[in-house]
Length: 411
Image (cartoon, rainbow, N blue to C red):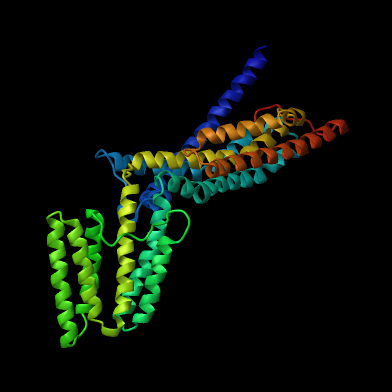
């Protein structure tokens, strides 16, 4: 009985030693990682920032030391990731006495594949899960499709104005029509052409700004006397429209903006139709921006600490999920996991994977649920195959009376 107690104590002492070695490795590598903590934090937050509107891509901190704590946390987790080969090596050395002699030689594949699986899970999370998840979480209602249309149409409409001022009005008109089609074609986020007269103060303010840019672009060129008169008239009408808008006379302001646009078109002579097409595209964009503002009636204010915790939790979760085949194989090599058991409860395990994925998934859409559940199921099935292979090998060796496990503590 004393020998059994002594053996148990020796194994617990060895476990403590190996855990200390892992802890030291994490602390040392984490300390080294602090040199690049800010760069690592920026990299980790890239999926979050890319999902935010371009004009508000920033994170906030709510206390004076939060930023420092975040960077320390980044360094610690970086050390944890970098110490994975050390942790796997120490784990293997701890369980090696329970393995057959030739199985103990597989330490290098165990460490290499274990590290590779962990990194594969983290990378899968970073490139496949996080972008779609944050796009879903940070894009309320129909704002996502609307924003995509606006980004595409704005680029085309701006090019249309440039071509107009560069002396190619026909090309500018074609681009303007393409921008209108991009906004109003069928599908999600469609923005119908706006009425010429509207009472939307926000939309009219945007219209006025856009028309002012078109006027400025025209004034920047040398004009003959007649064109200068038309542009001057357009400027005066634009100023009247702004005054009406400031006084709350939206309908009258909208009508005056149209008069200003007509005068601007007249300054181009026979090419005035192109100006009308470009103005129509920018009027449509103003309506689209107003719709986007109505859809995005909430604004995200994300803290550094909370977003980092969420990203790191998911990274570690997927790293652990991708280690499942290796863990199942190791348990099979130790004789603790039988193929008959995993085959019997295989369907239950698949249901459990879906349930766990549903709990972990921060969103409620089927796409993100599938992105989490499918890798878990694939890893489990791969583990089942490995259990079958290693159990078959162990049975063959036992039948042949080959080498037995060494029950003494590993050195």
